[in-house]
Length: 113
Image (cartoon, rainbow, N blue to C red; front, side, top):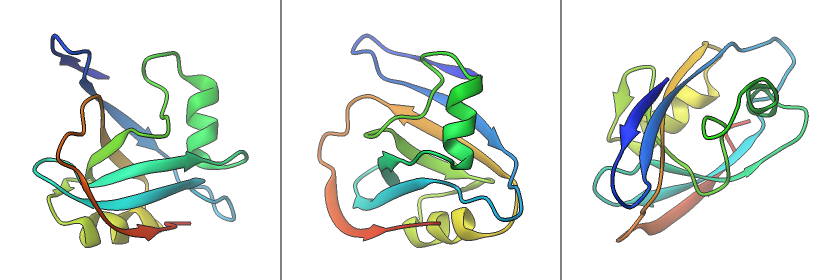
């Protein structure tokens, strides 16, 4: 579900992922400090739940490196809480943002798998 965009091409969209026992989420993320941005996707790995989402979705609603995870299951603003929710066994409802990430400062790396 797209949430719209602006003149510079940035926009946000919602992703719903069903966790499958034994299957990894399949993304690597970078923890960042900035206003409004939580976790930046560094890579999408083959064979994961996110790659399966991408295979059944159309552009621009596929998840790509550089996209920012703003919210996971209603949690936002706290990168540690976002990362913990990604690692949980729960199904995931994420708000993903694509576009400008000005003033983003990398504070650490995380593999939520």
